[in-house]
Image 1: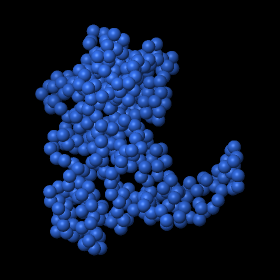
Image 2: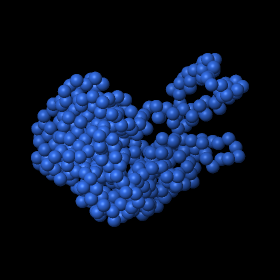
Image 3: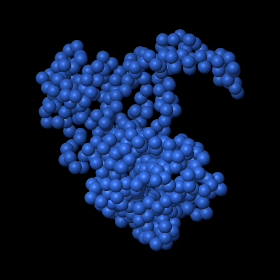
Image 4: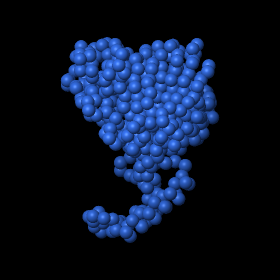
Amino acid sequence: MSKNEEPIGNGEEENWSVPCKQVKMDVSGSMSALNFDSPADLFESLISPIKVETFFKEFWEQKPLLIQREDPSLATYYQSLFRLSDLKRICLQGLYYGKDVNVCRCINGKKKVLNKGGKVHFLQLRKDFDQKRATIQFHQPQRFKDELWKIQEKLECFFGSLVGSNVYMTPAVSQGLPPHYDDVEVFILQLEGEKHWRLYSPTVPLAREYSVEPEARIGTPIHDFILKPGDLLYFPRGTIHQAETPSGLAHSTHVTISTYQNNSWGDFLLDSLSGLVSDIAKEDVALRTGIPRQMVMQAETPAAALRKLSGFLRTLADQLEDRKELLSSDMKKDFVMHRLPPYYMESGIDLLEPGIKFPTLDSVVRLQFKDHTVITVGPDEDQSDEAPQKVIYIYHSLKNLRQTHMMGRDEETELHGLCFPLSHLDALKQIWSGCAVPVEDLKLPTDEEKRNLVLSLWTECLLHVL
């Protein structure tokens, strides 16, 4: 395998110190699909020939990466992920405008939505596509396409963050969206036809929201290139971009795979702070003293109160370094509640049924589906008449519904998992090491507690009995 690496663009970036890298590959005879042996293997094969370590050191959250591949077999695999023709079959399963599909076109720098409302019919979609030169934006195709489910499930394990996707189908000489930037890390896979991309320096690096940017503000593109089937493009959140289908083609189809929305240090700090304050307030009476009278009624916080708050924050910072467990669970719960279930279409196993072997005190057990579980410490939500004690929560995504993945926060979405006393933490750490563990060696005082622990995990399909 040979490769050429060269920068693209004019090199006049103001916000990026180095230009986007372009990697050209001649990989005839290479593997025609991705490597699904592990989440890390999948990601490495996705960005090949760039190494994972290099990607995170030089590109992640920093600058775009363009990988152009001259590999017919890989192009064929990419095309199988989603085709325009797939919509005819999927529409029969019941799609709705706005929820599942948007029909739009960029006209004079503005997005014009052409949705009809109600249920989507393929013939109407095709008519708008052909006659109005409209882009079809299909939301979260992993709900219907098994291979995208397989890819995104592994990527969620790799990143520890939700991974969504949208497919964009655009006719020749047309553009669906105006120049804009997103609040997610973006991986573009070109599936059918070609797409002309232009990238611009960020006005808001690592943006926390989506925003359309007017042409007059973004200036000239710093990167300008064509994506072909099998090619991959990555760019960080905040990167301004626009894309159109060149002339002379029937259409272009690409899938945008995105991740790391609301997954920053700032988000983690917000999630952790309330639990930390609650913990320390139990030990420090100063945090339990009342604020001055009528302070919440004032337009501005008094200087003396700001100094007091600054002192409390320094106290929290000092206390934080000495704590092994953070009373934080919202980000963990949100992730595990809304992520994809494990991909099992090829395994022939039922994830919702425990194994054949029943665990006993003489058994040796090993954790399974570790990448689909999280452990967190929090207050016992079942205690209401007394001060809540800390307990251990184990949440998993084995029973999550693929059909609702990334389709909005539903109040009826169920969180699956177990609750154990804090005294079980050492035993759970033994199991979560991933090694085979004799049940009788678990660090619990009684045989009954050992049996109950492994039986609970086995019933939830989290333990394999060897």
